[in-house]
Length: 359
Image (cartoon, rainbow, N blue to C red; front, side, top):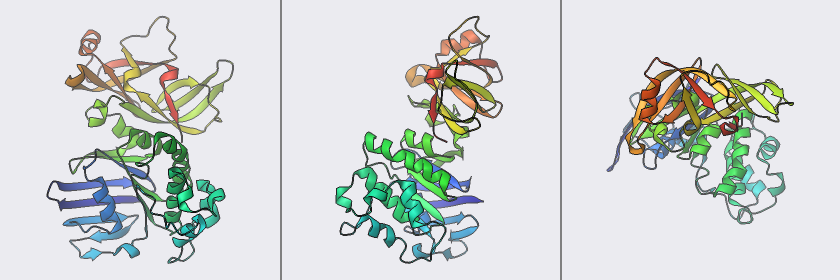
């Protein structure tokens, strides 16, 4: 199953020409700067904006096809919407707000008690929205959208109005949500921490155009994309726990066709996780060091070398058997190591510099 969208629309300040197809179910993150056109995609998918031309299909159901004259109204699209602000009814309790989403639909697979448990809002049911924190309000808003039994969940920067502490509070719930529900989710953000925690697929958008789209691990490891020029650039790999070595206080992960050692994790063998390896933490070498404290010496092949003149540096893209890494180094390092596309190279990574994220 897939979610596909093609859209053309002209605004006074920007012309949008967007097209992508991603697997479903899963979380597809629309990522890019403010004004790139991400919210327009959400509004078109929900039926709140009719573009000049578009075709939108979710899991075999055509929501819109302007060429064929198909335009389902919002109430027939079975989409759940979550915005930056929770938009809860202030005069209703949390429980009543939640049940409001159930009023116009037949009972479905998503049950009230399950959503309350999944989002951790059982203790809030009798309270009014003004007594909740920002993170709590957003969890209730997500619950209300889900209880409308949507076939597609659309989330337009749902954490943008929260401070760092509230965002840290709600991100684990969103991670649980994406693994517990067999539902396509389109999620808009320009925050990298949300992207790396939640995305299965990503669509990179800039100035109304799709720059790249695909699996998050594939797109995040490309040196030729704007993501690689950020200070916090890094590769993302989906991994599996292979060994917990309690004597050495290390965990061995397998991902991308490579082995990574990280500080001991509280995860069982075969458990899944994702790791992020910052480009600035990856040292390159042409041969194995004789003696070194690093646990991770990962062999790979140079795929691309992209110049970042603003920082007087380059980003080297390193191909792994089924993934990739990025390394930010100086141009002189590239010359000294004789690196070029196709060259073998070793990526040296400290265990403590690898960020282990949720499943």
